[in-house]
Image (cartoon, rainbow, N blue to C red; front, side):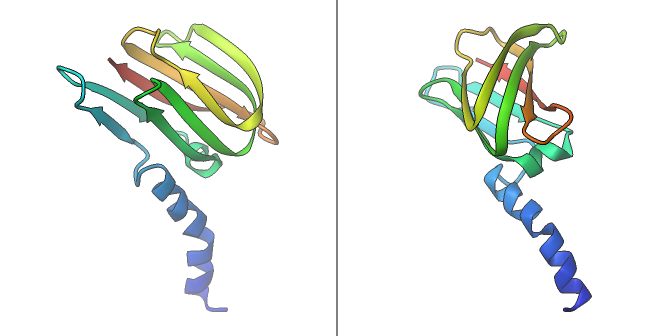
Length: 129
């Protein structure tokens, strides 16, 4: 096999994952149906997030974060901008929905502990509605 083909095969999963995450590590979800508009952003600097999370999106109708992962989610933590725990829940599946409608505007941190991982993977969630 040619060296260039080996390189492509090793990065192909990451390229496909970027498609699932909207082509960017920083997806943006505007909603123009509401007067004044609302905005919801997710940001992360954790490279494992793009490798282990198949999709993470905001469902505007149900006002929830929908998550699908490559491995079983063992535990989820949701923290405020001061890194104080809002909730922690054991999960046990590869998909999760987190309702965020009742939380005020602000910065939050979503942390997932996945099967066979030693540390949580995390993302910054900015709620602007």
